Length: 475
Image 1 (cartoon, rainbow, N blue to C red):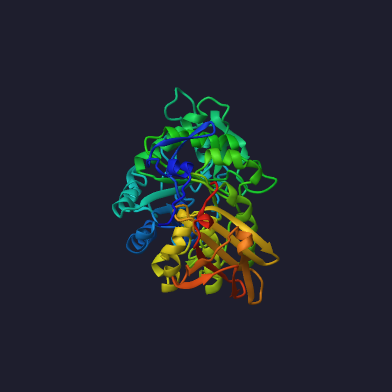
Image 2 (tube, rainbow, N blue to C red):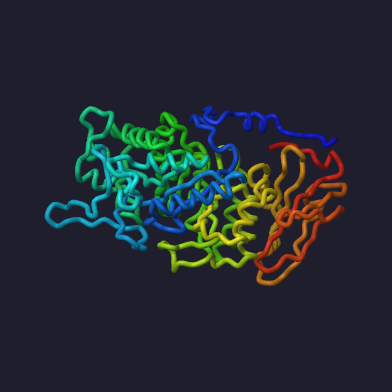
């Protein structure tokens, strides 16, 4: 009988209940992401202009085709309050100021407490102040979870209107806004000065509203950007506190391009966080992701998932935000490499393509149970070797002690990629299974070597014959 070797720590983490609070450093975190979250995000398909019908269509596809494999989140990305003209493909849509009174236009849907609401023309079920409640109810009726994107800070139009802060005695938006703290790529928000009385109350009021809507997932943007941008630590903390005190459990994702030097703080605040700028369907960008994934993989853990960004598979940029409407520019080989890296690195899997038009090939990438198991069940994921453009990744399966092996050829020529038993610390023979085609290829001893096409990859599972080769020393 196989010897099952599971760390006591792993057992403790895995057994925590859905909404049980766990200690992480000096912060309480909800145990909502024991495995990397899986879902769909509207940004890569529809930019800032997604509509309710399009969200519902993707939710329906997920429920009918992907839910059984663990896909569950349906996330409306940014600018859902912006009144886009029908068919507009404008990315990062701006507000302008009227000359006479400096009022921001177009006016975003907003309540009396300075909290943004969905644009009722794009989201008809939100009319009359109902917010995302009906859309969330629909997603929940499919057995899925509903998410939204929010920008850090307070709307500039709320500052102009000097809206009152809910739950405070006379504190207004002008009293807590930091008008020097601005997002360089979207001009709709001011930062919140967390030293001011009423600042935390504002963020708490947002989470109160989102709880009422039935939100399960929040992507908070403009927390970081690039090396010369200030990491917005105080507002990340404030949002974490607001999430922790909210009546409804909500997973928190932080965006974008978090600096590795802030990893401890990011871990304390977010359940997942972006490790790069926007990732698109360009081979040069995918190649760069390998180094970032290798840097961040060592801190992947339950409720702490470095996010390599959305999956650029299928139909994207249907209404912006990057280039013309198209099927992904990645070749079939590159798309499999993309999915293989995300799987073995244990990145969250958030589909970016417009799913109702998925090809059978794209569907096969999203529904391979063996590959999904690498992502959802693997531990100790790391880049094992890198020899120029030839890269080998490894992770372990905690219950069996099996090895997951990713062979990657980042070069422009078909090349053999190998990993030796010595590099893996193995002594005996192993049964080899190809995870993408599901075929067992027999037993090997000494090394695994395969010819991998240019820009290609392969995923294998090695089952050691000897019990000592199945031992897992630590998490």
